[in-house]
Length: 555
Picture 1 (cartoon, one colour):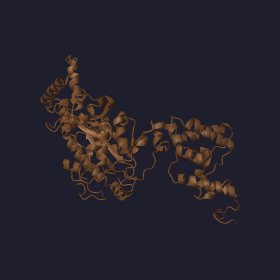
Picture 2: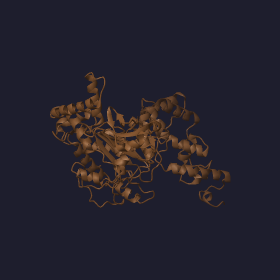
Picture 3: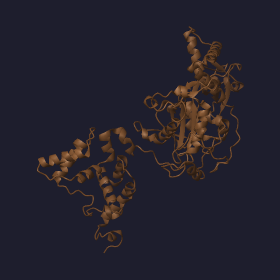
Picture 4: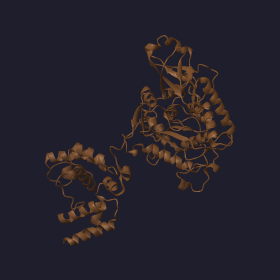
C-alpha cells in the first residue's frame, strides 16, 4: 500500500501526476475555502493560476468544504458517497436549471415556494419525477452568491459581496493605507457671539486601515476643498497634544504620522494639483477608488456613518433626512458652537479608540500600541505650517519689479530682490496661498527647494479670506466698476464687514460669514520656523484617559 496521505485516506492508487495536480489545487483552493464568500474576481484569479474554468474552481471549493480539507478531497474520480453531489436525472436537472435561470434569477424575486411549484409543474408536464424541496434549496444555495444577488436585487446590492477588482490590498502596517473623505455634519451649529444658528459645518476625517484608528479630523465651515484635505493630513501627521490643549480637552490621542498611501474617491478636491504635488513632495502614494465601486472606501464611510449616528443624539441635529427629522426644530434646538463640536468629536474619537472593534477583536488603540514599534515606524511631522504649505492651492504668476499680483492684490518682500533681475529667464513661479488668509503667499524658489514667505506690499491691509475677496470683487462689478484696484477692493471688504457685523444678530448668513472670518483669524498659519520636536512616540501616552462624555454610550 502506498505511504502518506493518499493511503491514510483510503485511496489505494493515485497516479503521481494526479496527486501533483491535487496538491497544486489544494494550495490555491484551501485558503479560498477558509473564507465565508469567494467572489468572482478571486475565483477568476484561482482559475488563472490553476488553468481551469471559474465553474471548476467552485466545484473544487465545494469538494474541499464537503470533505475533510485535505489534498485527497481534490483527486479526480474520488467518490464522496453521494455527499454534495447531484443525483437527479439529466432531464430533471435541465428543468431545475432552466427554471432557476428564467424564474429565480430575475428582479421579480420569486420565492423558493413559487420556484418549487414551477419545477414540479414542468416535471409533471414532461412525465418526469419531481425533485424534493430540499434538492431545489440546495441547487439555489450552490448558485454564485454575487451573480444571484445582482440578478435579483441589482448590482448595488451585490457590491458588498464582491471581492474583486473590488477589494484593496490588505494593510498590515500602520499608515500603510489611510482612507480620507468628507461629509456635511448632521447638526446645526451656532455662532460664538450671539449663540444663534449658522448652519451645518463640514467634517473631513482620515482613518488608518490596519489599526482602524482615526488619525486626522478637521471641522470647517468651508465646503470640502484641497485645503480641507491638506488640513486633515497635517492633523494626521502631527502631534495632537497642542491641539487638544487649545480645545481644553483632557484626552489621549497618540496616533500620528505621514501616510504611506492615501485612498480617496474621485471628487475634484482629491484630483487637485495642490494635493498631487503635496503627496509627491512627502512620498505619499495617491490612490483613487475604481469608479462604480464605492465599497473601496468602505472603512472611512462606515466611520463617518457611525459618527453621524452619534451626532444625531446632539441638540440641533438635522438627522439623516427630513423624514427622520420629522417635526424636530433643528435650528431652535441648536446650542453647540463649532469649537464645542470639535471638542465633542475629539472626546468621541478618544472613547472609540478604547472600545473593542468588532472586526479587529481588540481596541484600535491597542492595535496601534502593538504596531507602533514595528519597522517602518510612523514619520511624525514637527512643523505643521511647513507641511501644510505643501498642500495649499497652487497659483502660477510671473514676477515683476513690484512683486506678484494675485486677484488685484500686490505682494512684495526683500526675499524677491535676488530674482527680479533674472525674472524673464525664470518664467512663472509656483505660489501657494491659504484661502483662509491671503495676507501672504509662499513663493517656491527657482531651485524648487524652499518657500519664501511674501506678505502684502502694503502691510497695513487687514488679513482677508478668498471668499471675502471674491464677494468684494463681485459687489464692485455690480456697482459698475470696470476696473478693480486694490484700494477699492479693501474698501469694499471693510464695508461688507461692517454690514455683516450690524446684521449678525438677525441674519443667518451674516452670522455664518462672521464666524468664518473669526475661525480663519484664529487658525492663521504661523511663520515657517523650526519647531521643537515632540516627545518620542510610545504605545501609551502620559496623559490620562479621556473623561467619560455623557452623550456617548457606545461607538
